[in-house]
Length: 418
Ligand code: ATP
Image: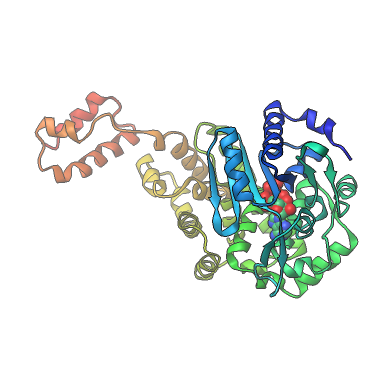
């Protein structure tokens, strides 16, 4: 099948880039193919800016030729035999066609250079095993060894062979992700193999780091609630140390979604949230701190993520926030928390006062700054400098509480410390 019509519907910048890759391959005598997610998304007519290219031959060499041809930067990952060429807004990942051998289930496979067929054969699902030729002789011809095109049309997730989930159990999470993202169904046998792998506790064979990465991808999807629901139903969350979800857990997850939307609507200029981690905080809600710490250490979450997850357990602050307290108190309570934790607290509480305090913190207090600095205190002749921090803090608290407003008033307040 020739997908030239689909090609003509692509943004012209992408069409041009693909044409250049084709031309470059022709001139330098490489055989190259577009593979994986971008082919799938092109057929589904969904935007995708990540071009995965398989090279029959040395991908590192081709990446060098291509980046020179395009006049853009590139990065080589020698240990993986892969390279990335950056042609903004697109990113081109290049890999040498390879064959994989699994010796131990769940462990990473041994690989050796091979041809396109072997490269597509090692892929997770038929819908991800499609390739498009970028060679002049058969430009944009679809290469479909495993029936991926028909599965895309039938909206089916199908593994390429029965041991697929056992060989690489992260595919269990990937299967759920793609199924839910596209609203597809599993083929009968794929679901059977998946369930067999789940029963064999295959998720326990994979390195925690790989599981963490797949879990994060799952929670980063557009509808994390839907992903979590499917995960709970199909695999359970035991691999995360989490009991089967109950009504109240779902209710909290819904509140998280609402709180995130509330944040986006009310504070469009504030930084984007790492939404995935707020959902994870909700999932860990009933897991005791110590147990959660063990789990997140095992999974090797990044330092910043670890801190956010741990501080999300400090829910006691909600008791304080549920009272009528001065803005300076609200500030003191919330200033050290990341926005993700604050939004999590917002979804946890039913207290109007607490919600109001959080709203004021995000909308007002957190933006407030003093007009004066240490230099102004020095000019006033206040000594010693070591106490400037304390003085400024006191003045700032007064400002938060609305007792002083202008720079003049700040200076007047400062003079009291003379
Ligand atoms: P997304 O749209 O989420 O980026 P993608 O299909 O591009 O999805 P990637 O994780 O970027 O997914 O992987 C690129 C391709 O590599 C996939 O399309 C698939 O063919 C292959 N792949 C990735 N992970 C696996 C795996 N665990 N087992 C087999 N093939 C995989």
